[in-house]
Amino acid sequence: MTNISPALCGRYSAAPSEATIKAVVNLHRDIRQIIEDASGNRFTTFLQGSYRNGTALPEINDVDIITVYDPGRSPAATDYWTALFEYVAAILAKPGSAYQSAEITDKCIAVHGTVSADVVPALASTPETSSIDPIQIFSRRVGRERDNYPRKHFENGVRKQADTKDAFKPAVRMLKRWARQYDTLQVPSYYLECAVYSVPDGAFRAYDPLSFASVATKVVGIGPSDSIPSIGSKKNIRGSTEWCDDDFAAFQEFLWGDLDRVFNALEADTSTSADRYWSLAFGDL
Image (cartoon, rainbow, N blue to C red):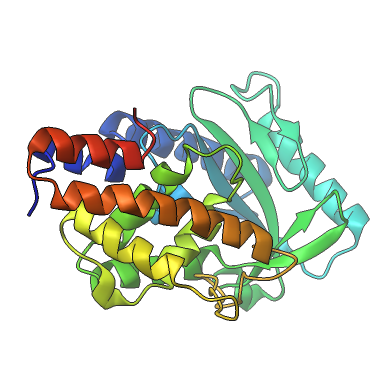
């Protein structure tokens, strides 16, 4: 243990409040019910992303909801996908609905509110794959389907959490919270989660500051030729089409600079000094 005050130790690993969790649960239940009722239960709807995976920050204000159209099958023509997006949007924005602001975007139908939702139309390849990954989602901007692994991502995250004695998800939240201070990084939170997932289980610790120091040290040690697997599919997310070398190197440089402050916090002789260094590492001046 160190001199970092107990109240500050968990500040940057905090999860959403009970009130936020309740709002998200109600939103998902409402949207699922609307879609299933209007379509005759032809959709399978479930949460994906940081909220479902337990890696969301306290101020989360939007969630991702996958809605798989069971009668349809991938691959599908662009016109089919266009009609599917319009069908889901029309269901959400029907007269009397609370989601009149539903708006079709690149990969989803955006629903705005106190807690907003990105409702993502999806297709499976066969009836059997309606309940297993991958499913296919569609980018209207590029006119192309791509595999998505939301359920496998969730399962692997649950396993990593157990294997690290519940230290994986807090470490992800800390790295997300750390990255938020740097507007120039522009790193998707999914990449940060994958980076933490790639760290060996033995590097995680029960004590948040020590866990962050250990995990971040492993992350800055990832070499140019090392891969970072996607949590769901195991595909390497390093490369020109995803986390390119220049962006990853910039991310590591920023993280390396703040690790000095983390170690100073762990080694500080007084609570005042420890708290100051720990806060500075996360951009709280």
